[in-house]
Image (cartoon, rainbow, N blue to C red; front, top):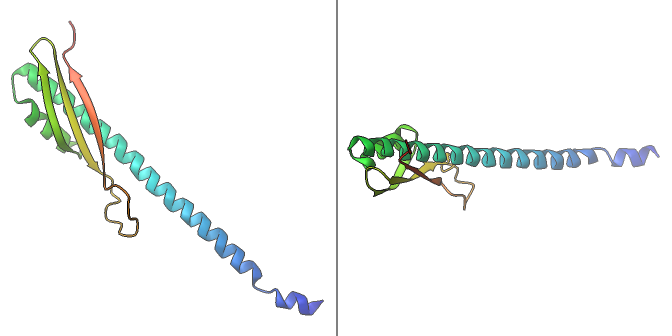
Length: 127
């Protein structure tokens, strides 16, 4: 009997290594998913603020897209497109913003997008 126990020494090591590999894989997946969720929220925030900044600038008579670009950059995004439709009383400003996910530097994760985009609209408020 002692001989059999002796031959099974170290067998649990493989089980522990396998469990640790699964735990580490799940932790990495959670970090990547969390990074994308944060980037998505940052992109939407930058797009919302860029559209609002453009709408305010339009009401002041200034350059809509220049202001939207400045606001998007101040919030960590890059303005991809900007448009304004309507007149001084009834208008809509559209801003599309791209934000880096932060995972673009990881070479070991092919196929993951390097950025997240968001679109926002802002317009005149009724008095």
